[in-house]
Structure formats: structure tokens, C-alpha cells
Amino acid sequence: MRRTATAAALAMFALMATGPARGAVTPDEQWQVPAPALLPFSTGHPVTGWPNCHVADIHAAAHTLRSTYGVLGAVRLRGSHCLIRVTKPIVALLDADRHVLDVPIRTAAAKNRGNNPQAQGATNAISWGFAWRGSWCGAQAVYLRVGLSGGRLLRIPLPGGKPACTNNKSHSVVIRGSFGAPGEAVQAAPSEWSSLSAKLHANPTVTGSTLRGLSVTLTNRSPDPVSLDPCPHYAIEISSTHGAAVPDGHPGRTLAGCPGTETVVPAKGSRTIHLDPVTLNRKDFGPPGTKVSVTFGMAGLAPSAVRSRLA
Image (cartoon, rainbow, N blue to C red):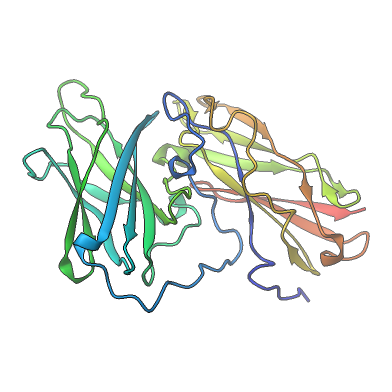
């Protein structure tokens, strides 16, 4: 029978896959997409003992960055010895006169938001991402409006760009991304990634304590090329009938090229991406001959699993 593991032992190993293009070239993780939760994980505990923040107690900042599919945004809030309770991140974009722009605000699908949970409880520091997509020919967005607990609204200056105006028609939308701690990956996977499917490859045997030969083939079903922008993190889970364990745990690893160069999966085509080897603690998986399952996960895509065997 499969052994029950602790939340720490079931934590996934998040790695960077391949990266942003056309301006989204930055190592700052706030512009990247978190990996999905292939295994249960602990979200920690909210800060307690402080009063709720008044609007004047919150230091707020927003930034934007151009990417392949429009404009990415990131918002950071920090309370001064108080707790921030966000009920709805981004309820409107405002022009210089503080009039609401005619831009719909939507929430990304759960599978596109990666493993960062939506806000629960309260904290004194929080960030989240968003994407402004489509064509926009109207006024510049100068502020964004955020909903706090108790019906309060917070207005935050929004420096930076807006989507390009195409054919003199506006048809844009703001997609809310994921919550996270300041500095964490908080962008959502673009809807275009729904055209991708993943197939994981691994060596049929695990020699010693390292699983090698890992790669993933991404296949694009759409007639248009798909860019992996913003840069996606990916997760690897390895389990056996004896249990599951964390690989050797360096979540900051990135593949060559991410996020500095463009990675595109061609229209009606495929692209294979080589992944780093994964080091195991063999005692958690069983004796030689034990079968293990290896699963790859990336936000916006269905997971892909293969079988291997301990040599």
C-alpha cells in the first residue's frame, strides 16, 4: 500500500521551462507563470494579531511589461503593521480623470494560474499578476482599482504601456493572474497554451540516485505558432508504491534560454525541450526493480506521466 507522506515530502520540484520573448526579458519571477500543484502542498498560515489595514496604511505599486500576447502587469501591496484583505484584485482601469475605462476584467481559469492559491485569510504583503490583452484605442490607463474588505477601494498608479490599437477598434480584456508573495511568479498562462499538449520522456531505468534522459515534447494543435511567454515554471513529481519524495530541491533552476530568449512551438508542429536530471533519495522509493511514476506539469496543460524502474 502506498505510504502516506507529509506535506513537505509531497512538495513538488518547480523548475523554469523556456521563456519570454519580445520585451519580456527579465529574471524577475513576478513576470513568470508558477508551476501547477501536482501534489498537495501547504500554503502556510496567514499573519494574525494585527488589525486590518486602512487604505492609508498600505503601500501599493504596480508595473507593466510588454510581452508577446499584450501587456503583463504586476501589483504589490504591503501593509504597515496591519493585515491586507483583498476581495477582488483589479476591479477597473481608470484614465487620468479617474473615469472607468470600458475594459472587461476577468479571472483566469484555475488551471492557468499555477500553484499559487487565491487569497485566503490575510497577510501584510501580497502580490498578483494580470495581463491586458487585445486591441486598445482609448485613453491611457493611469490607475487601477482594487477591492479590499469592507467594500473599500484602493486606487493604484499604473505606469507603462497599453495594448496596441489594431484597425482603430478596441476589443481588449484584463485577465487576473495568481496571488503570491512579493517577488514570486504570479502571471497566468496565456489562453493560447490550451492548444499545447505535453508528452514527457525519461530513461526507462533509474541508475543510482539520478533520473536522467528527461525531456518534454510540446505539440501545438493550432494553425498559429505558440510562444512560451511569459516564462513558465514546470513541476516534476516522482512516486512509487512505497511513497513519494522531493527531488533534490533547487526551485530556482532554469533551462538555458529562459527567460532571456524566445521559445516558440510551431503551428501544427512540435518542439522538444530537454529537462535537467533529477536527484532522488532512493530509500524513499523502494528496492531495485520498484516501478516509479514520473509526472510533468506546466500551467495551462494537462500533466504527462511516464513509467520508469529503479535499477
